[in-house]
Length: 448
Image: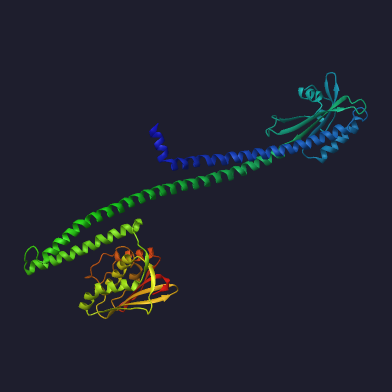
């Protein structure tokens, strides 16, 4: 029992889809059949009203004692001619052995005497007797609506005769059969389309379940990467510490060849440490776990720190590295540490990809936004490279960049961080001319 309950809980959406696939077509069929039957009943009710009206006219207008049979015959013939649905009108006189036909639109009935139970019951009642009969003697199986009622003497109010009106339902039946056939075709098409829709819904549901499972697997992957990366940071820090001690000679002296090997090890350790840090940042950003300490801050101070960090490398390459501040720098609402990471990346890249000339940081205030522009005279890039620049692990590959190390994650991380601060990063670049990376952030009204 528990297994069955668990199965229902785990597959509730699937069971819901199956129920819909079965229930909706059944409801459509049931509703259609009900509509057809209601239509038939309405039409038969209209014919019944017509028969009752005809019967009432005859009962009130015929007096078998005062009126001769020829006069009565003429009356019922005229009524039958004016109403195509009336198949037969018969006036019957009461006799001791039954009901003798006095007048009838069916000439074959004249002179006959009927002893049917239907006439006996109708004569005994004070209200009209209504029946639907079917003529099985013909291949058409035509149906008729019959109304029988007694005729009273106008003087003594005694029952002296019986009127029987027979109305054909063939027109109604023909119309109903036609409507039924047409409705059946539309019903089949509708049910088929609904089934297709529900089957398609079931497929989408399968995709939704699969998408949910993929998200769960993706989350497990992100969690694993986050945990593994975090755990690797500790031994990495220890390795860096030992390498630093060895290079400083705290554990003994080394020859030049060994020192060169240590430098290479240290360089690769730093690259690996950067990769771990960026991988951890990617995981935090994707899972929304990166913390931000937002506060009013002068971003030019962040730029100044980044310039100091990259200045030695710029001097080594013969580059001019500077910033051109505004007279009054606006305050921006940012996380200084996170924006430091972004600016370090942009200025560091500008220095790396510039062989000669300069790297300059400019500022502009436009439409409530502070534009921090990192402009270089480096190798630049074409339109194709600009399209993929902010995707994960994307790196420009040509003969000018083949020897430049990088993970391809820095710019993606930088833009995501800036977007978390309600800003964005844009790029303008021309190959062999240079690039402009623009950090756009809303600034505060008060200036310092």
